[in-house]
Image (cartoon, rainbow, N blue to C red):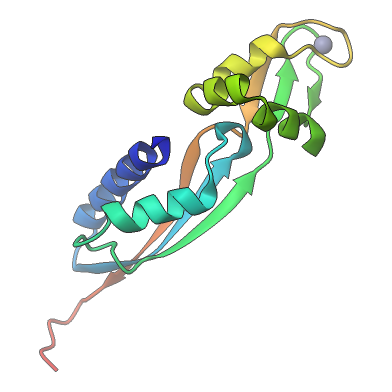
Length: 146
Ligand SMILES: [Zn+2]
């Protein structure tokens, strides 16, 4: 369900880029970076994009999804770390926490402590949300009828 709203905002950005490209014919490729903390299912997102992009210039675009590992920073001592796959699994296996994080990844920081100094003053450096890395648009410069 959440994937559909993400897909819609991606599509809006793709359509904007399309409109701003002179002679744009169709969107050939969309590269996305999905933060693991968003707990977005890449296949569900791909499917949602296919559905919302129907009858748009992006309907046949290839969708490339790269998963981005989370990274945290302690604001007290400056230490940066990546959680292990087990830590991520712990979040996604907890139905209550995973729902919270799925909707708002920032809530995860209230469950984190710095592994070096024990401070809970922690921020997310990367790994939340979905980022459009690039959009490839096929351009037709000569209006050929052949
Ligand atoms: Zn620290």
